[in-house]
Amino acid sequence: MVRPLHWLAFAAVLAGSAWAADKPAAPRCEPSRACAIELAREAGRQNYAARKEVHEYAMALITIGDLQLAEGNKAGLAATIEELLKVVPPGDEIGYRTNVAILQVLAGQTKEAMATVRSMRDAKRRNDAWVPLANALAGKGKWRESLEFAKLKKRDKMDGTPEDDVMRALAGTGRREWVQQAAPALAPADEALWLAQVEIQAGNLAAAREQALRIQNVERRLTTLEAVGQEADARENWDELAATARLIPPDAAKLG
Image 1 (cartoon, rainbow, N blue to C red):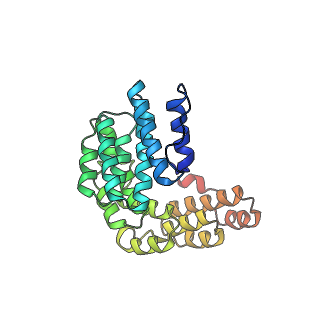
Image 2: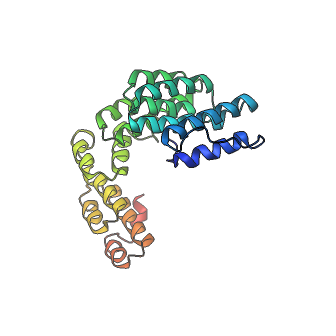
Image 3: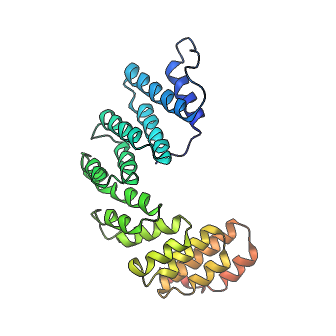
């Protein structure tokens, strides 16, 4: 998804880029979320009409979709998605359709999201799109639905498992309870690994080290301890760095 932008600033940037050559127009609506949405949509349309510039138009619509999704505007979101699919070609190289599919899946439009991904002409981009959709669902705590999308990706040995993708996304949310809920089904032997990632992200390095020591796989345990040490170094927490370093054997690199 696009990074959150202040909606008035976003509309102003697009409006300025579209109307820079024209005489400044008087505001046509009072500053509000609804006004920003309409200004952004109109600016994107004008850019597209004048220069066939897809990027600004698509990014405006994606941001509008984010806002409509957040406020529960189902009718507005449906119209925005329809407009996006008309302007973005199936063979696009930027991945706009992945963003469209994420909007759809977060809105509960599972079948539509699958259809959008499958409409992508590039086989690699199409295959890679399943994981961002899975991540988006995991980011909402919907790990069962997330797993179904992660399983759709065709994988090689370097890709890891669908379960790892979902657990990594859950850990990335920082929500300890979500990791604990999903781990028995998805990673019964690796709950400590993913809880350690949550604690590292939160800066709870002593707790992360404690979880790391529970990891049964030696290589993963040492890798996680190294991650704890790196975080301690980045935070200039020398006591935690020293405590962690004492747990890593000097010849640990030979295990990699």
